[in-house]
Image 1 (tube, rainbow, N blue to C red):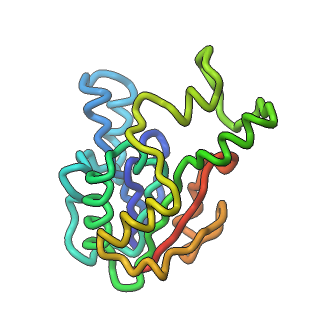
Image 2 (image 1 turned 90 degrees about the vertical axis):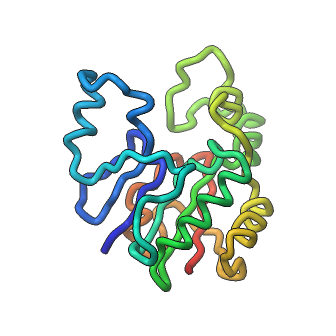
Length: 189
């Protein structure tokens, strides 16, 4: 089994079935930095700019996790990445997407929730710090995701709202994170 963890950041499982892909060398260009040295020794980390595509063969993976990556791309980049996911997925492969949910952020803020499951190292409110993070280029609603998937070539009738740590492919949800403010979706090829 081969699974992709796209835009993995620091969430890089070491199990052999995972291929963790991100462009972290851009964040850590100095090869002597401990984080860079660590990632360079990881046998299942692949450094790649995903806006240039997924550097794998057609129909070569069983599942793909896109956890909190689409909001870092503009809508056109997201569609291109979703097309690439469709290209590399095997028949019946699963694409799992998790996104920050603006509705959940708003509801939690209105409840004066202070425990979001993550630290807030800034003086900003958590909704401002995490949802309106400077690195976010869009907020992806379910309707927007449906449209992007449709344009990318998916059968959107197969898109399902999923749950934290539940998946068609249980390995895909084993590294789910941010359950308090995320929404999870899955679609089969």
